[in-house]
Length: 115
Length: 469
Image (cartoon, rainbow over all chains, first blue to last red; front, side):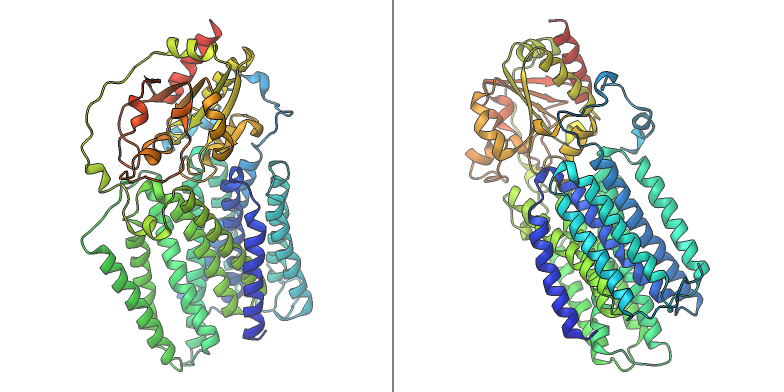
């Protein structure tokens, strides 16, 4: 691909990004941030490509760490986004209605120190 | 990890797969415009990512399969465990951390590409070298900056602005030095010295640290959003260096989304990006003397009476609710009130919490239907008709000084106008100022009652009292 084609793609993608993302309501900004965060994990593909040519220990180490970092970015990003979005419910769907929402779930109690 | 097929990176099938992948990213984000479709949108984007990774693994340039496997497995393990263990309240720092590793990956890939191209004393074409340098600098600034943001939000280091003398001059010189070194490398592109390149890498590390350290914890959401955009651009630059269209498009999409979010947030705080990033907000203002003034203090029982006999109640949550993990208790209180026929809504300031929309996520976790979550513009006109506004762990976003006092550091910031409500109950542990470090006139108003307690305990106690009314 020549440079001019790449620049064309870059400019168009920037406009698409502005257009698509301007429509997301404030309510969903945290999940949106988290989801776009996961999408830039695509940089991991770069790790897959460069490690193929790695021939000394340093390059292999750099490449492996880059792949691990990129994978954390992708997997973690999509999973936390899914967890957050799974909680958004409308008025008509309240499955946990009768369970006493004030109860601390084991998950919360376990992670209290992390705050 | 044996390649399924030995595809060339430029093969049509590879490009088509990448086009499918980034189309799914765009579709996924589009679905994010409504809570009912957002989750599906996230899955769609995830499928796009899986396609992009799978087709790349089938390329003939893939080698060192064992290392790839190790990298992926380690990443999978850490990413999965961290995502399921993180608390909803800790989401901002989690996103900061994920953002950081993405930036780190971009910088490491650039370094690897630099070594590969200069390995046999070879030169680098400028159309590859420029993006490599960009990815190096921006990627490491993003990595280290995000880690500082994480440490601040996680209270590993003080969240108040850490300023040092001449910091702007220091950062300016550092940036100028990095640019000069990049130009020197570019001029010498026939045989660029690796020592100088590593110098750029290290200087960028320092820049990432010294850029974020002086910014206060309250401004971290803006920083994270900006660094999110940075990582996106670093990924796009890596795409230019590696001739990879998927990286260019996806990275650019994130670059523009991060930019929009950053601008929206700074608008919501009525401050310019430059002011947010370079003023060390809160450090100077905190020095102001806070005079002692009388307040009206009430207990849970009085609060229950005020709320239980009201027609309409608006809750205004802030970071204090997140810290106290009070969202479930608040929901319980809201349920009790609704049982009595009280009209209950939640007013969400765009920058309440440590991330835009942070409160929405927490209240959604507690099963509050999103119809009850009102944005600032929507709820402010309703405030004069609201019987009781309950401020839970929020402070600066309700401070009337933003409207009334042109000399206030937060002058002009849009606020939730709780002072317009008939009565205000502020649940707060003490009269201490918020992140902006300024006193809140709201606490001393005639129609304001202070309930000194932690958010969770107070909400549960009031709920119990309402039940007994």
